[in-house]
Image 1 (cartoon, rainbow, N blue to C red):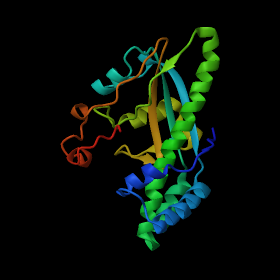
Image 2 (image 1 turned 90 degrees about the vertical axis):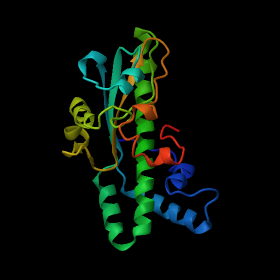
Image 3 (image 1 turned 135 degrees about the vertical axis):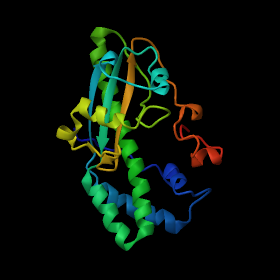
Image 4 (image 1 turned 45 degrees about the vertical axis):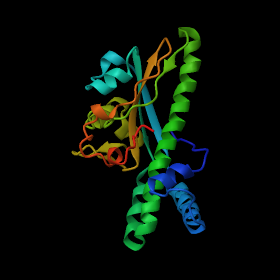
Length: 221
């Protein structure tokens, strides 16, 4: 399905991803505005999801086990901004590397916002469907690569949602998404309140080399 992104790219998160602390100068803000226009023109946000019994999908790792504690069902989801975003960034890298960095970081946030929009649609469907089944509660989304949840699960998620055929989602042998600005994730569903558990640094397979930990930061913030 096509996804309508109703809000501008998050400025504070965009600046943070660029390493900017404090207020940005006028030129950078103008450059971001220009980059956002290019991204919005090139992006074709699409998403798909599938609600499944939790037992019907293999979910290895302690992190995902804790996150889905108490959940009987799950919603597997996938989102992509489309290949034109990749092409835009690739073309810009040849002529203007600084602008390419702006586009790349902005596109990553735009993909997250597309995920937020798909989550809203999933929750709307659940609320409508739950009138007959009783209230359903959800966790936050959790993606392959978080904590000790293997990045290789990208392929399984795409298979579950038929992502290649329906929205053009593919994955390389190294578990990289194509188009690059794409995300897969899973949401837990339960008949009682659940909050999920963000992955901790101790569970993460990248904890030994994580640049955020060196700065005393946490990717779940």
